[in-house]
Length: 242
Ligand code: NDP
Image (cartoon, rainbow, N blue to C red; front, side, top):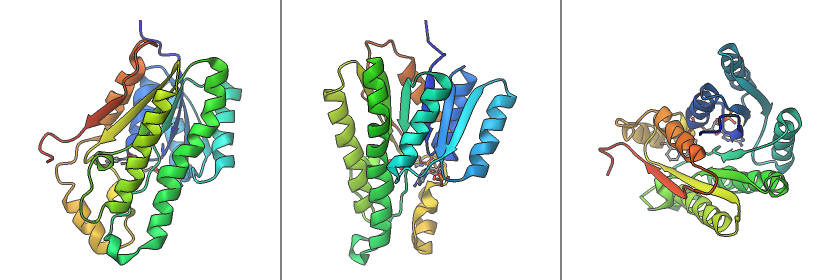
């Protein structure tokens, strides 16, 4: 039987895939602990979930700060007694030609997409080790499988998430690791570039993007597997996406 009493920490829960996943898991009966920087969004989402009879908490969290991430996990553990799933979802896609040397965008992507995931791993791992169980769900991308023009640095960060996930899995023992690799999903992600022309081009390429709820359902399915089953990777993209 499915265990819906799980406590799930989600980064990047203020919009897109993270918010859709929070709603979906809370509706299924799980307790969700939400982290992101935009407090108004987190507050509204927690109120919505609680208003529907669910359990949720939030903490303003910048994933680039290890102390913020430690505090987010501490909140989950102290308030709800355990952490069953850590979803490292926060991310930034600042696309642009590598020849333009958009060094600030490179820094932001490395800090959020790679170091943010590492901070999440570091904060959750001691809890999982003590419990002798846990589940990392890291949100990578199909960009972690192939590089396209203007996507080199974003891809590099997502290849890194894939490598981290595989390493975690190999050394995980009873701790599960799932890599989620989405294609075009209809969220605020295309807005991440610092260059307006790139944002417009990326948005045009998202015409067939699918709803973030589809990713949330896949995450829920991976969580629902029995403890001895680890779904290692799920790739989800619009049917028409090349
Ligand atoms: P959104 O832009 O809607 O969500 C990104 C989330 O990350 C927001 O909640 C944002 O919250 C949070 N975030 C960004 N920077 C930080 C930070 N420093 N600290 C804490 N939170 C942060 O996009 P998606 O929902 O699409 O993105 C979620 C994940 O999915 C990302 O890892 C992305 O790379 C991945 N992905 C998305 C695809 C898509 O097509 N949409 C395709 C493939 C992968 P806030 O600003 O409030 O901090």
